[in-house]
Length: 254
Image (cartoon, rainbow, N blue to C red; front, side, top):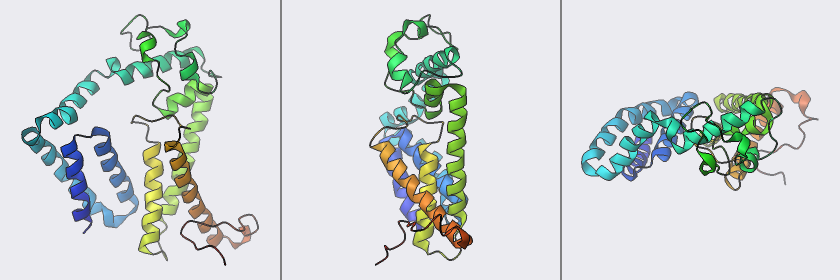
């Protein structure tokens, strides 16, 4: 039943030639399968079928194949000269100049065009590092965003924070005894959403961007509320500190 649900989605994404959507779909399914045994066989089926579908795409829709495979291969092979590579290169120049304190909130937006940062950078492709043409609104990577804003210490704290979220939500997702199938799926989905939103090897919106960031924080709060529910069940002595905590899977008290 699960395979019958996931395979049409896979086929649609492949036919549409949507690279990031396809990658996110496969990654999210894989992450959820780590903590949900019933999803592991369907996930393996997706991994087996995906190359075959992508291969058939070369005959069914050459344009989609070119976008999904050929363009992706070209961009990865020449990543440093790609738009993302040049953005990351400029961020590296800014971090190198201010490694401890960073440049403050929204640093990339405000200081990317400064002449002091128009340097070759680690890529050494252009004398001006791409000039002002690479100066978009943000770095498209949350770790680089944290580093440009607050230096290496801030980036380290940011990574630690994300790691703590994943640890708590992952532990909550693996606790499945005494829960209904809907409750288990809800918890696993919240964990998967948190991992996908902060997966570093992807193009990301600004960390505090709305509405995408707002939705992510709403889901994060729902996941942490489930963790509080488990804490109350395991340690009745924390009732005073966690009094009144309510999760989205519980009905409000009358």
